[in-house]
Image (cartoon, rainbow, N blue to C red; front, side, top):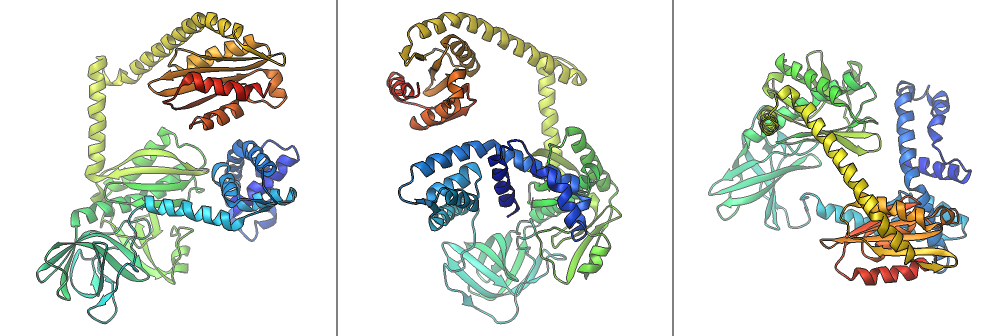
Length: 563
């Protein structure tokens, strides 16, 4: 909702010729008005301001293109209604919320097919669901009730096996869904994946591939690996211990890293999502810039220091308000009851959590961050590994370093500077090659201009060039634009069925509204690919199996209309 409000405001500012970011400058005013009611605004004012500015910059990058697209859409609409599919394209491609499109449509005396928009949105969600992981469909079959009573008493904090009774089960699509009276299997929630293992009874065995939650019930998703089916109510339930142990290490390490992130980066850091699995942990955090390697190293060192101290974890159940007063970390999106489970790690970390954890930090063994990247505006994503997985990661890294050291025949401490020398030398050689190619191509550019088509006193120069280097093509494009005087130029290169196009437009045409970026997008789309770029120079690229000569001839007809 907040993003929609910001984008509507940004568009109104754009109408008032305010093309630079401006909304973040209002943060102080909002804090002055609302700070007494929401004191966290004062505490995080600087972070809020940065996030809003980043969001506005990101939207401004697509705003002009989106507005151009809307204008064309409004001009070509049949009747008085913009189709839902067209409105969804504005949302999906340019980030225009539906209410913003409706506002712009009303200003043009038009309406928007909102039902069609919702249908298009639902289709996209369905595609995402189908592309995602297996989800439990409880309506696929009939539940068979074997015993009565309460179900899913969770024993997994203390036990990894239990003697249980099957309350009910369902068989559908080659899967068994089983609910027990009590279970050691942790059901996926709070970012931690569900347990796997086995459920066995008289003459049958089920391999549990996942455990999920439905209300308070733990549903064991399983496959029959022995026997002809479920034929008894009394079963043995056994969690795959090695997998559970790896997950426990990753979960406790997540808590340690969360605290370390706040310590190193600042209190503005909030958890924005997580995944605790067997092989790695993933942590999303609110932070608006790339985390430098030096700070990542500090975070790693802080976590590993806590691991080496071998601190025992303290798990307590207490009231939510009491836990908050004690400084327990909470997650904004989580819903907490009156009673909560608090995980305390010495005087370092205190967090509300329902997941499974190691008994002492030393059980984690070792912690290593493997990747840090941007997830979305103002949100970073970190991947990390623990235990034997972290050791293997570091060992592989040293193996690769040793291989490089051997190839370059330098001591390890000189490896970085040697690689930098080679990269610099390579850049210099590439520069010389481009310069040589550019000077050799000047005659070719002159020939292209001499053979150009003249339309309304302007030149249209289109030609195929033998080059597989996009930078070389752009360099020739610059030469072509300089020599045209007034007009449009197109250079095409085909290499291994990949067609690359460079479009150039002279300044006088840019002023009149003809832009190379628009031409590249339109022509690239016509040929089945994509394109874009600056008003004076743009590119398009695509896999192409047709006739380049024919494609350029058709392009000549289109571009002549712009002159």
